[in-house]
Amino acid sequence: MVLCILSGCETFGSGPTLETKARRAEAERRPADALRLYTRACGKGVLSSCLRQGQLLAEGLGTEKNEAEAMKPWLRACDGQVAEACAAAASVLARMPEEVKRAQALDKKACGLGRQASCVEWALRVINALEGTLNEAPMADKEEYGRAFSALRDACGAGESRGCELVCTKMEGRDADACRAACDKGATRTCHFAAQSYLSQEKRDFKQAQALEERACEGGEPEACLTLARLGRRGWFKGVKPAVLAKRACELGDCAAACELGDAQACDTEARRLAAKGDAEVSKAYAVTACRRGLASSCSEQDAEEDARVEWMRVVCGVEPLRNSSEVSGHERLSCPRCPLSFIGNDARAPSLGEVAEGSFVEPARQEAFIALDGCEGYEFSGSSRGTFGRRVLLAEVDGQWKLVRYYPTNAPSFMEGAVLLRTVDGTDVFFSDEGSGCRMGGCSTALTLTRVTKQRIEQRVVLTSDYDEERWSWSTPTVGDDGTVRVMLLPQQEEGEYIVEWKWEGDTLSLQRDDVTTSKQRGARTKLVDRDWRPAPSFD
Image 1 (cartoon, rainbow, N blue to C red):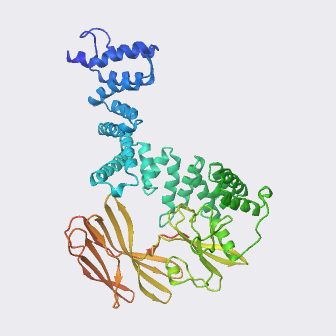
Image 2 (cartoon, rainbow, N blue to C red):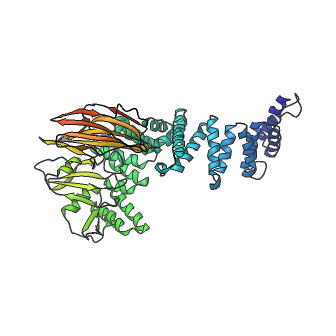
Image 3 (cartoon, rainbow, N blue to C red):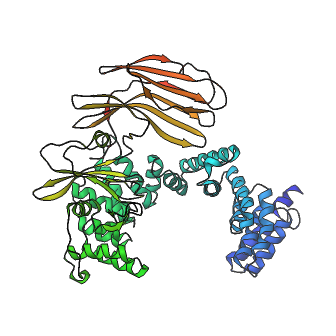
């Protein structure tokens, strides 16, 4: 009798089962008969028939479409541990705002039953629900977020391409393996991210990066086309045609960046698009640029006033800068069309120490301009990645024209308020700084770093690394005494006391004097003293 219940037979041991008859009816295109037979088999406990009954009801085969009725056999099968039924029910509930939590629970169950696609759906719902609010979320939600991300990684490892794609994009390309796996499975956007990982290595692999960017560009990713064009102009990529790639990027929707690369028609297209949106000021900047590049249809009466500042900004922006007034001082300021903040500039031959710390090298016998574009979210300067920080650029006057010499991201290395100057002698500046790499799910990591800036390069050496629970610990700002003693403290948030690390800076040597931290047995903080060799700082050429 047990066999009869599982198989759906009408009488024990006689004739084909109900489910077999239902499948035959489907094959013969008799959906109404198939639905009737699946319904009977489901009523007798055949869970695979419950799954198919729900699918016919949801698709409107053999009856009117009725997702509410489909939920009943699906939930019955889900209770019987049929992962596909749990996933099917979740897909319907997810479209109802009041049922999202229930859909999430069903996807989580299907994931636990081994359905990797459901792991991806569940993880995505958890991550999206907490995105932007994770730091303020309760610890239980943070732990769930961690489990969700782990499930995404597991799904990726099991061959679920969407899992790899989400790991890659949610981590903004920082997981190179996931990006490459997703790229190999046809997610062209992740090919661009994978290429960036090859460009960010200490020894850049230009050949691999170019191959991946070409796949992404062909697949419709405008940023990949733009990167190919920029690095082709620098000579890093071989055999590329920047003008063709700029046009391709414009066709894919990024005419503003294509204009900055020199495509006059892209400038005109962007000007018309902005005019249609009613953004007359920015539209004019692109039209002026198109005109300057020889596109007569974009020309009108232009302001003939010229000065060095405008020329600087044309070089930096790639297009005509915007002119507006400071609300505070009333003075004119200039900005790039895609950058909301104005620039800071100086025309000194020797930038100040602070500017040198940001990466501007003094090159005598050449007129220089040091430009800072702070907070230009997403603005492209590096040629190999889109930044979310301000950028510093060094310009030089060559043969009567201003040329862009170098780019420097302000976060590599970062000289913030926490940096202390240890030495300035013989053209070499040495700084000690806390290079924090951010916090995630309550856990933080940081590195205490020595940085030396010479006329030729910036180098760094890590002296201590740590991982800690930000709710229980925090690092103090480094300080340096008159005798060269460098001190940092790991401070507990929930109790009295402090854990101190001290070094002594003498000549070119940093020697450890005191270490309360690495010997501590306290939970929630792990530290390690290191003594790495000097390495080039992660700065762009």
